[in-house]
Amino acid sequence: MPSRIASIRLVSSHREVYEPCDDSFALVDALLADRTNLIEHNPKVCMEIGCGSGYVITSLILLLKNEVHGVHYLATDTNPIAARVTKETLKAHGVDADVICADIATGLDTRLAGSVDVIVVNPPYVPTPEYEVGMEGIASAWAGGENGRTVIDKILPVVDLLLSEKGWLYMVTLTSNYPVEICLMMRKKGYASRIVVQRSTEEENLLILKFWRDKDDDDDEESNKDKDKEEISSPTFVSQFYKSLSLLMEKKQKQRR
Image (cartoon, rainbow, N blue to C red; front, side):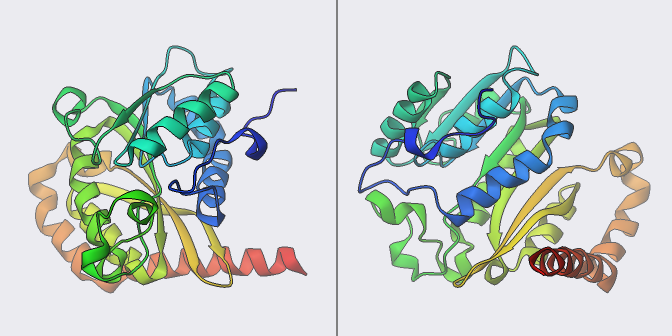
């Protein structure tokens, strides 16, 4: 039976390209956990921003290819070596995607506006000095600037432009990125959110967040504006977020016993 995700032994590598690690595995695990929903979602355009080794976009294709047909897959990376490595990984698995060397989605955002049904992102989220952001080579894969948010905050408006009305975003974050604040920012743009996967390692606490357009808000936008402001400024959303995180952590602790 063919593997549903990319095989590590077939993932190409280069010293200047970020290799699959805990964050990559957590993102793919989130896609696996949401696979049934993804199939029912029936996406026509799927995209990875910051494809690195190609492990995630290849896994997404393998997850869907026998169930959802006629999907157009794209992947971008600012590192030209990463773009080449992703192509090699795709070829090794017998799948295909358009791989483009671009900063987030530069040159594609206008053409793809409102048409992408699924976006996956493992952004540079590590808190670093600002001068490290956007450096050439492998550093571009992790350097996230202050609170690890500099690149994330650039990606989110682009994602909002690209996503279709039924579009979903899966994104890797750290607790030090202030994920509640990210969710509140997206809430202001009309997105609901939830934690799909929470994973603690020796060095970091990873959260894979899923965002989708909140249809209830769109039905009566004007009448909901004041209500949205109240919800965003109230502690309710924050408490619900941390309740979800606590439940996930409790579940993981029970599984370890």
